[in-house]
Image (cartoon, rainbow, N blue to C red; front, side, top):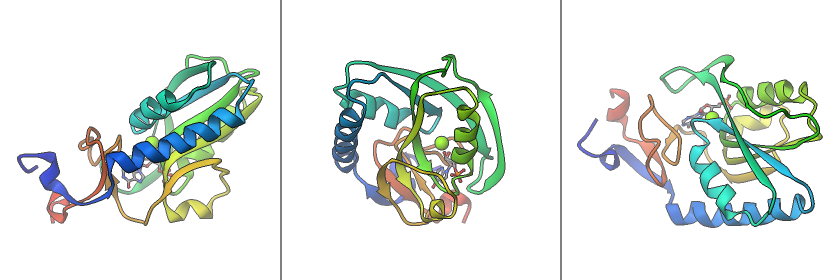
Length: 184
Ligand code: IMP
Ligand code: MG
């Protein structure tokens, strides 16, 4: 680690302002689509914390509830292990609810397709997905993601909730890492 997190960032892909303005657009769409229906936002820890906080506050919708789930599909590195397990389950009963999964990023889509299948068995009225970021590989799996903030190139990114070995989540913007961070 350098002396500041910022010195480990190679390039800023999305600024705080760009993220905020896109989230406002997504929130407006969600408000419109869920008008007259209660919506349960399901955040996927830990990456989705920032998206959840900012997206939920941008909503005008009067009847929003929130719950959290933690699943793990990645180790401490940058590659998918392909293994998904529930680390923390929801408190809420999903029966009859309109569920909107809030994600930081859809990469291989493995985590999300597994999660949707799992939540479907719990009897919700509907399940949709809102993700801040989507990578190109996501197109290979059949996951229907209704709300996408940004399609980004196939590069490892950090910040705005996303980590490398648990670091950089607190950066307010999204960036790529300097090679030295990976030990290069
Ligand atoms: P997927 O199962 O391949 O779609 O990946 C899901 C999870 O991998 C995300 O929720 C992130 O936690 C992590 N992930 C994927 N790409 C990145 C990245 O570029 N930076 C940080 N985490 C990532
Ligand atoms: Mg995640």
